[in-house]
Amino acid sequence: MNVLLIGASRGIGLEFARQYIDAGDRVIATARDAEGLQRLQDLGAQTMKLDVSDPASISSLSWKLDGEKLDLAIYIAGVFSTEGALSPPTQQSFDRLLHTNVLGAMQAIPQVAPWVEEAGGQFAFITSDMGRIGGVSGSRGWLYQVSKAALNMAVVAAQPDYPRAGFVLFHPGWVQTDMGTAAAPLHVEDSVSGMRRTLLGLKGAPKPPQVPFLNWDGAAFTTW
Ligand SMILES: NC(=O)c1ccc[n+]([C@@H]2O[C@H](COP(=O)([O-])OP(=O)(O)OC[C@H]3O[C@@H](n4cnc5c(N)ncnc54)[C@H](OP(=O)(O)O)[C@@H]3O)[C@@H](O)[C@H]2O)c1
Image: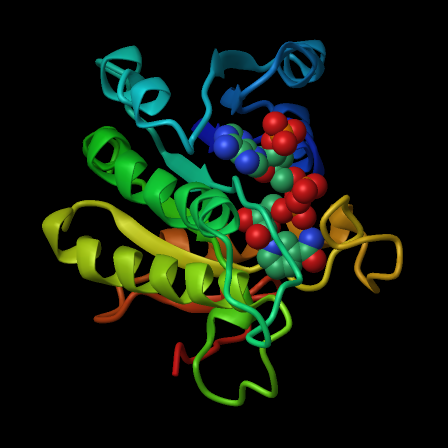
């Protein structure tokens, strides 16, 4: 399989790279700094330098992928902040969260989805259950909640434009990474192997009418 991982310098993305390379797949992985690129090269990935929050940086993605047939692409890059609704968000904080979590994905979709369509492949996006609108109990992570809800909409709305690719939204669980912290109950190896298994199961199945929004273990969510 040809696999593209966007935002794979550490955490869930790096683990996807490790597991797909171990399985014998060809991995093209992006990171925004030299240390991240080196970690991916050490695993055996082909790398691209990419800052998803910078449209100038991400604008070269399509021609860098020219001619590729991607069986799977995963948009993983994301940032978190704890700020809530008791104070106004700063412009800087808003831009950091929304540019990375939403704008980057919206820049990536038109540049990557055609190469996924070439292989009749899958395009997965790592969102969060914090982007669900139903059952919200408070505003801790307000900007993050808004960004992941917006990501969900961006993905669902774009899918009909790329009918030969299968889009998928994943909540990876609460995972032990820099973002998830050591307090998280789920090991990154288990989250990633669960998502890989779920993607494999979806591959041969008829394409559902709605973009699936799935937990790491394949259980279904609703976006509302
Ligand atoms: N961990 C959890 O419990 C959890 C739960 C729900 C959803 N998620 C989602 O899962 C995804 C991965 O999170 P993680 O837990 O692996 O977090 P992480 O360990 O903090 O890793 C975040 C990744 O995103 C990359 N990234 C951030 N801003 C970027 C930018 N502007 N351009 C390119 N890459 C950028 C980081 O690269 P750098 O090394 O360059 O910063 C890093 O590779 C995120 O979308 C997150 O929202 C995580």
